[in-house]
Length: 317
Ligand SMILES: Nc1ncnc2c1ncn2[C@@H]1O[C@H](COP(=O)(O)OP(=O)(O)O)[C@@H](O)[C@H]1O
Ligand SMILES: [Mg+2]
Image (cartoon, rainbow, N blue to C red; front, side):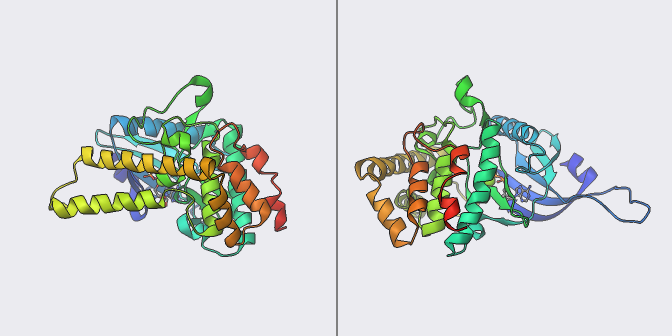
């Protein structure tokens, strides 16, 4: 942190994730041009407490940022700093819409435009053999010019399907954010088309305002944590819920979501998903596109390069 504060002044917090915090920063000693103008791109510092697991995530993130540099889908990387306690990534501050706000519209035409921007970014990842593995609205920023920037590559891996490499970062639990994770990521075996499943979940949610899978399991998880807290006198800063208990609840939630996926996609042949999409007014091209993303078999799932030409994106033109 000393190195960071020696060079940058820390301004407001712009985000918080599972593993750390992100602050906007300003370089302290930048030489002004003769006109006094400052031509410096705004920057942020992503600060994370170090651990063995997070050091691997940092490597993944930095590697993806270098490989995708200049391709318009990732923030520009400025520098990486490490001390005994933290590691810090200083990168471009991407300004724009992110999270829920991205799809906070009932217009299917606007949503299809946004989804198209996201698919274009996913094509770039695919061309560069990068699977993000944690594609959620919180990890997407839409710039004013319509470009979609994907952030947070800690769980990404490259050429994994060829090299049989599975991220060391997550021995326990699933890989990614549960509601968006593909069946294989829930089983800890990410695939080349894992991000396409997450894209399918995002598209389904954006167009119907409902999640296809996981809501009940997540509610049960919240209840289990609440029940434990009430019965064990846990309150903020006083006592923590033991890790083994949290892990047990997490495994239960993952099993619940995995089971729901099988029931809805295989046993029920997607009938309930289709009926919800029809009720929400999703066009037939939209329904067929989402179903090709939510294929349980990763080989049957569409690739980004195919998705980009899907008739859904022409429906609203
Ligand atoms: N380069 C960036 N520009 C603007 N906001 C960012 C940037 N990087 C991260 N953020 C914000 O900080 C949040 C957390 O960062 P993220 O990299 O996703 O960390 P985590 O791995 O903890 O989820 C993001 O959801 C986003 O809102
Ligand atoms: Mg994130």
